[in-house]
Length: 300
Image (cartoon, rainbow, N blue to C red; front, side, top):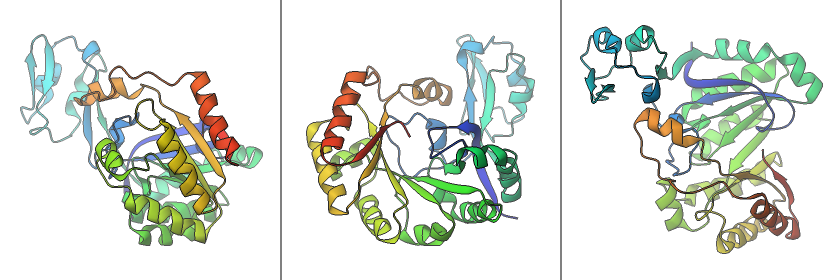
């Protein structure tokens, strides 16, 4: 039975496609965006997460760890990630609930059954299931079967994608995907590589090709101050989308919610000092796309 590595299943979502939706978040992403607010989605494996503010340095996690991966230092418990085997024993024994293992294996049947629990809400609102991440297509076998399972139950499906996958993955899931939520971030290749870790060539090629196969695509543009919201980037994006005759875009304002998660994972916060864009700035960006002939929505 095909299994996927899931880090969250979120119910009653209203920003991941039309209507009320259940969003399934899969771990693993080929991009490493500086502003990612789901930093726990980047790694392709399970990860320990530690809330230092809840640590009472009681030593329970040290005793629980049979691998010797946890030790007390400077008044708190510190995990050696190289020795940690992600067994979760320290999570169970932590009296402050300050430790967690991010990522759990679930079968297709388990995930589809969880989605189907809220089928009545999808039917009433025109909603359904959205598969996100990370990059959902990085676990293509699981995603393919899960999409098919949802469609067999009459549940609308959407896939949120970075586009950084082989075209064969798109072709495989096209028949069972009702909507693609396609992230488009930075048009300059070198800037894209700097802020995401990869070139944007494959992303742009896949979007142009996908637009020839289906009209069920919504572009998602993260508005990141000092990174994506400059006039040149917006102008180049408008020109590119006009070139493939695309007219609908969602603007996603940056928010610094990833800061706390980064700390729990022992990652640096690369967006230190960057605040969410103001309402006025979001309106300016919205007007730029609207004046270029796009149907624009702030939020997903």
